[in-house]
Image (cartoon, rainbow, N blue to C red; front, side, top):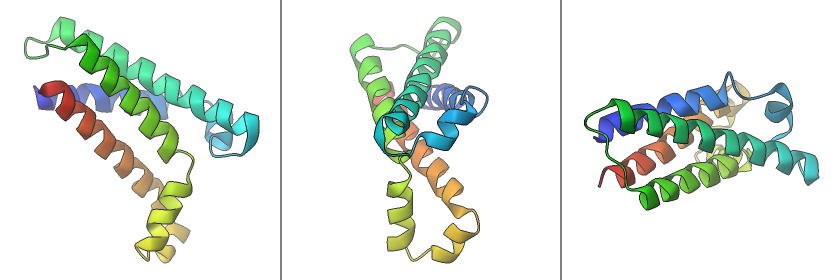
Length: 131
């Protein structure tokens, strides 16, 4: 069941991060003040909604997916919170500084570290959902 849940969450993530993310959210989600936080939290809410939809479809369509509603709510809260945190951008920048990846950061590596962090958070959610 873990693999099915992970794929469902990953598809939800890809939808929320690419076709469903507005240009405004992408440009401002790490910004300070009300505009930045609104863009960030709206984008994180999009992740929660797309992942919830993917999980619901999976629970209906797939024989191996059974969900506990309270655990699903917890997993979705985790996805929203971790996505909002990672997308503030300073956590990725701090990681790359600590890991001595300044050269890679200057050449587009931050996007890869960002996606890796999101995927790791999705894996944790899928693990929790599959227990």
